[in-house]
Image (cartoon, rainbow, N blue to C red; front, side):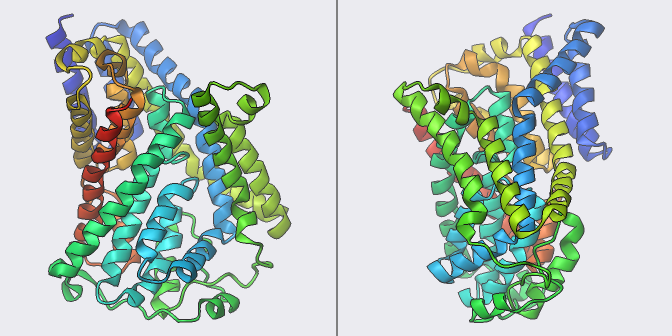
Length: 481
């Protein structure tokens, strides 16, 4: 088949996937499989070859990242039920003060809390952010909503073990230790600079509370310790996704105080103990990157720093902490919740692998490699544009990142670029224009008390700014890799 025919059929497959998801409301999992099958058949792989490629691609990617995603989500479910997120935000507020909280909270979410399922993390953290917003003045709601949006979305694509980050690394064959290091190099300045830009724009008159907020933000109490010591049956720690949105939105923030622990919550363990296993897991993965860079080999360190082993150690440690402070039945309940949350992510990652395998089998990588010049910044911008267009069309950061990575994975070797750069550029592009088709958009609007107009500013524009800003560190890295 000619190069032109391969390019045309690939374009048709991608457009078909987008239309099936957006126009016909078909589940993304089914749409991606249909697109992969069409592409294989149209490009001449044959029935048997197409089905084998789709199945093999699905299995290969899950074999690489399936357990990592599951371990990360399970850890997040346990930390959620332990009340760790609420307490961490309380600690940040006491440590850095209200005015610095948007940066501190966003950076913490983006770099440290990515084992937690995004909707759960948003449902838990948004009422806390809304309660604190009045302390930041007239633009407090805008600043906190933007900080949440940027921290959440940047974290899932740039930070291990964020679900999109794991998928991008797996699809492009990037060692997770490498992605962890370079992802942090990108996400920290991206989050800090983007929030600063948006805060400046808001305070110059772009944010109008009377038009961009549904109602004045609740007045937060000045004594966080006092609010933490009281108990109420409507605490904000038990949300398990979008289903808990309404209760959480009206429960913590509406009364003007930070959400408080449930009446049945046991003695509060130290935060370091709660997060210790997760920190240990990430440090082990980072140790693998360091030993690889130093070309130092030790079998024990090599085993423990393997991402699967490191995250398993973190999960086991978190389970032990949970048993100590929640009891075995509650731990089992938390794990069941985590298993349910991870199912769709695993399936989407798998079909992303199917698309990538099909594209590789039809030889698209060699064709595109001939059009894009190696060793320049242009290919990374092309990657960003493809992911951005997919996200505008589909409306899901994770789906667009996975689809873009699947499309571009075979191109990495022919471009002469380090695959980690392509993974990061695809992640950056997938952040562009979070809009009305995104669940995050509507959760932020409801939980932060914004109008649609206000959410378009804080979420859509804010995350788009981060998408563009992220290309700065990525292009800078390309000069050295």
